[in-house]
Length: 340
Image (cartoon, rainbow, N blue to C red; front, side):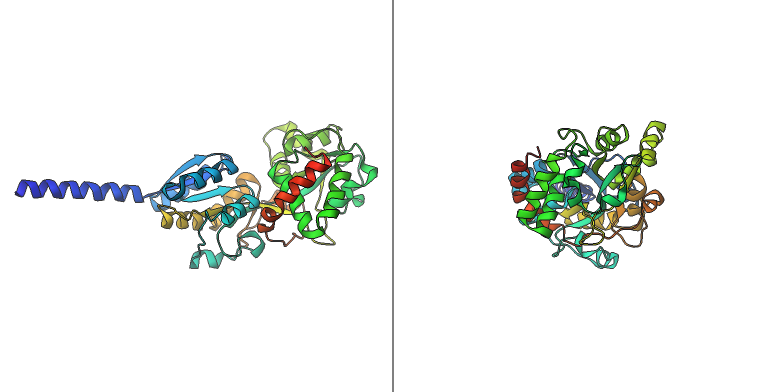
C-alpha cells in the first residue's frame, strides 16, 4: 500500500513537474521575420526563465490557422508587421484586451495601439518618398498626392499594390480623403509608374539611385539599413538619395507598425503578457531601434541616431485600426487603377 502511495506520489509529482515545465514557455505566432528579434527573445528567457517558441508564417496564414484551431490553438501571442492585420485579428475575436500597470506606464501613443488594448504597437516605420538628389527638387514634393501629378510621368517606383505596405497607405488615404479622391490619386500614381511594381522597398530605392526612376515610396527603416550597412555599395546608394516626409502641412506622414496581441484562447496568457511587457521595455525597444532601424513606440526610447538625422516629422494621428476597416475598399480601388 505504501509502495502504491509512493508510486502514486511519484506519478503526481511527475505530472506536476511536467505542468510546471509547460508553464515556463510562451508560443508566438510570428509573421515578423527579422534575425535581430531573436536576441530580444533571448533576453526575455534569461530574465524570466520562460522559453519562447516561435511559429513562423505569413500574417494572413497565421490568422486563418488560429481561426481553424479555435480554442485548442497553442498560440499565446500574435506578432505581425501590419496594423491592419492586427486590427483584423481583433475584429475576428482572436485577441484578448490586455493591460497592466507596466503597460499603462509606458504611454504608447493612442494611434499605435488598439483603443481597447487588444493589440499594442511594438515599433513603427514611416512611409516616405525617396528622391534622386541630383535630379529632383524636393520642394516640388510636399504630399503623397503630388506623386500623381502629370509632371512625374514615368518617374515613380513602388512595390506591389497587394502588399500590406501599399494597402495600408491607400487605406489611410481613404480614411483622410474619402474613396473618390483616393481612387483619382491611385489612377494618377499608376499613370506615373516608371515600371510595373516589382521587388521590395530596397529595390525601389536602388532603382532611384541608378536612374530607373526619380521617386519611390519606401519605409524609413530600409533607408536606415542602407545608411548603416557594412557594404560600401549600399552606403553609396544611400548617398544618392534624399527623403521627404509627406503631408507635413496637413494630416501628417503615414505610419504603420509592427505589433502584438495576446490570443484570446492563450494557454499561457500570463507569460504572453510578460513577453508583451518585455517587448515594450526600454531594453527591447532599444534593440528594435538599433537592430532594425525602426522607430520605438516607447516614448522614453529615442530612435537610432541615423534615423534622427533624417529629420523629425508629424505623424498622421489616425488609429491604425482604420487600416483594416478600409482595406477592402483599398483593394478595389487599387485593382481598378491597375496597381497590381
